[in-house]
Length: 565
Image 1: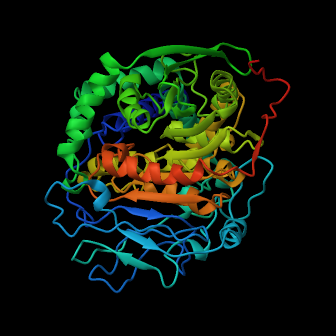
Image 2: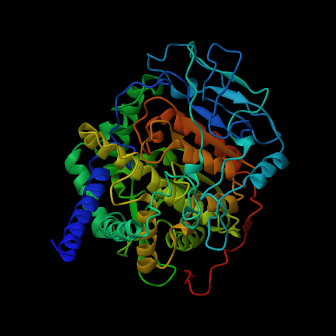
Image 3: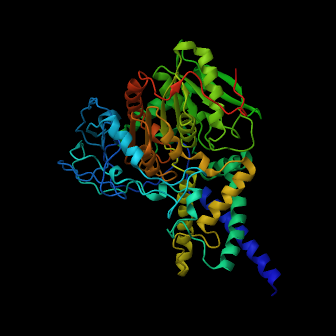
């Protein structure tokens, strides 16, 4: 057989592998992007443990693990709460009732409190070394930063209160895999990241096969048609994924599923039939189209939540969740990102261009509500990063008071690495039956070459690097009060990515809340309605009364971008 035939067969094999890789991601039910996602029912060591709230960078002597040792029966609970300001918070009493019984979620929260100065918090953020988050930065030997030693375990002397009488196993905290960047992968010495061969011929072949795989995967996740196809395909695999019952289907008793069922059943009827919905429009900041949104006006309220949309998230799911903010007294604006739902655009920009469109949304809100306008940036998953990226631009209008980031990604390369590893492990479960161990890689598609190829396509199609949509870069540049939320059962974007962003955030008024046990998978924290509202209300009660040091009367936008009058 001649060389041409060998090459043709190699191309066909690679195309098949690319398609298989994409479908492995799609078919795995743990890869969900809504609060209605299905997750595994496998018990976890923290199934009866309480959720955690942390309010400051957490010192540690070990950058790869997070263990809490306390003078309580529970020696290794991840549940924590550490206060970052000089003001000691009120610690709610815990409920000693069994977690097997439905109880209000706000009584099952373990609280740990300690105080530290704002200066200490800023110092922790400033001294943390990190990889390059932009093309201007340089990398040394690794694509990411080892978390600072002062960031992985609770502060010395912190006290934990818990209603769990049993010990828990320690859990792994943030790792260098949560800080991967495009600029850093070529300098990495980690074989899990730098998977390409040192053999020039093999390296050349896999660069071609990885490029083919990237050309299959990228349009599936980044184009309007591809994202719609994925959404329909996932619905075909899980017909009930948008059903309201998924809000309590995999919810631990300690989060009171009976209450959640009552709340969300009413929320669905409220959004479908009772609340008045308005359609708003603003021009894209670059003048290439129109962004659209659904606006829920709440009487004469001057307070507004801007709700960032997740990847392939449907408006109905957002609408049910928006009732919580409406019940707190907020107007709710739900913008649809470029390339999704009723907004124009054929490509999802992962927040890069959407954050500029948010300038126009905020101008419109401020014009509507006047000088008393108060705005909170909120989002789940991709929407969380859009909110963080907007907040990270600096010189924000004084009306913008706080950010709530629910399960956002630290960097897109880190997210792709996590998904790549999951796909490789799924494939390995098949190949291992014939004695072929893949060791965390996909044949002919090394991670570093796949990532480089996807970034090249993104630059060609959209004009920016995947490093330009970094959650880590955003939080380093934002001084807004920020609440970071995630769940331990999130298998799409690990909670460690949220914790990494919290640790590196420049905000001196920040909190981290990670829910343990079964909540519902990715973007599911809002399933725990009582806990969710309690934590957000407590956070906003403080944040809304502060003037951010990063606020100004107007936002400076590049001259090439058009801002609504």
